[in-house]
Length: 231
Image 1 (spheres, rainbow, N blue to C red):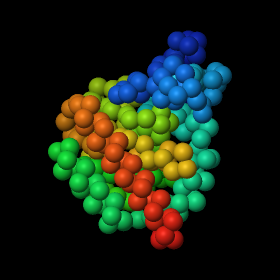
Image 2 (cartoon, rainbow, N blue to C red):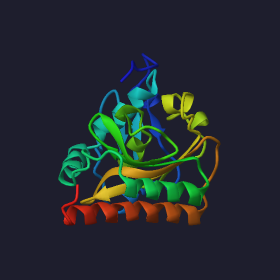
Image 3 (tube, rainbow, N blue to C red):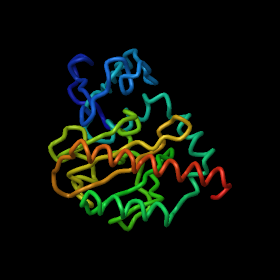
Image 4 (cartoon, rainbow, N blue to C red):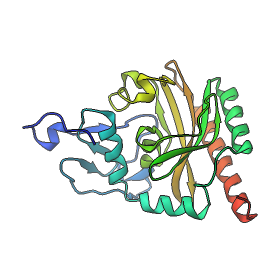
């Protein structure tokens, strides 16, 4: 990523926790289930430790985003799952557009999306409130959602040290609030069902459950399409 700030300081001094938002990861690894797919050794100049992500701050958010991608050892498994489920060929999918419209209406937000994280692009096979079908992978909030493999809630992106310099925050669509639930295929998170607002907000426990259930509905549709041999 971009050059690392704070030359002359130790890696520990430069490192900071990433994405301590929403539901916290358990002490025993991903979601507290006693498993972690992440590296536990220090990776200079980045740090990665069990139960949370540690990275050195860079001069742009891109250094942070690339750190997440590089240290998530499930990345190759993710791309294999995307290939197996034929997700890379998806463009505009009416069924997922309908799901995102429902999510936007249910949570009263202007934007919702079904995202798939390809190697270089974030694909949006379902989207409501935006006129785009892909973004650069490095800009995707969902990088953190899939790295955590749990619900991610960013109540105010403009005040968040991880996301405040993201071009999707500083420019269109001016994201302030983000909540994303992972989409898992074959046990591997490949993307998310997310909702976005242009003003800060919070989610109730009931809303968190709802978002997770909608994400599971997306998974069910994808699995049924594969079983039916439908692209």
